[in-house]
Length: 169
Image (cartoon, rainbow, N blue to C red; front, side, top):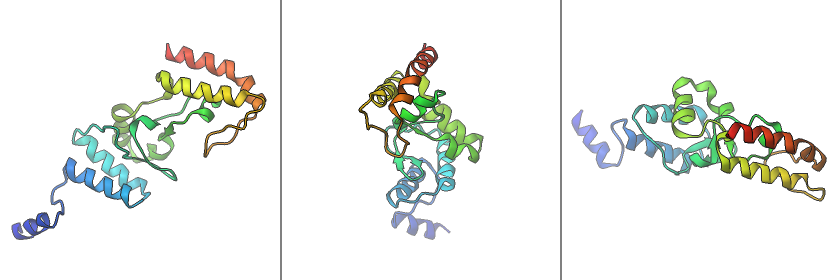
């Protein structure tokens, strides 16, 4: 009914599913602190299919941590266990891989970096954290991640650094 659609538009309700209405819905989910991966995955899938390309707005849901920007996340973690524990980037693979190929394609190949090994910045930041953890008097660790004993960090630092640099080159 055209009158109903007209009334809904007048009230600010989207009557068509387009990029603008999908982003509006995603922002509502974010601002309302809704942590529904299924819902945001469907929005991501539809945004991807509409040709959307995100900027640095915080639109990626990380369960328990809220929404982050694309520069704050990767699809899969470092191969090195030490660098995984020292990396500040949020890994989305464990949360979103169950939602199908369209969501994986949108997140992993189009919107965010697939792995941290391809980022010199992520590599350097993770290595700096590993070096900090390797110091005997260190009490540093990332929030939400287990602390790394200095002896363990020191023992794994060189092999992790070598492997990560080889992946980068």
